[in-house]
Image (cartoon, rainbow, N blue to C red; front, side):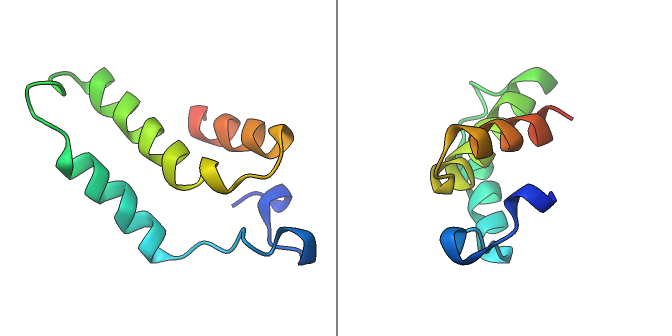
Length: 73
């Protein structure tokens, strides 16, 4: 990830692993096909799942903004 999101003693919970990635894919797979019909819907779902898994761990707005910037890139 970005240098700004590396774990440090005050942010030790910023350690991410493959289990976190699997939560994202589980969320995408659990979505109903009648609500995800376009590429845009899938992209929005992917961003939502990333924010749900990773964004909930962010401890301040600056880190949330860094995550959102990474997702938008």
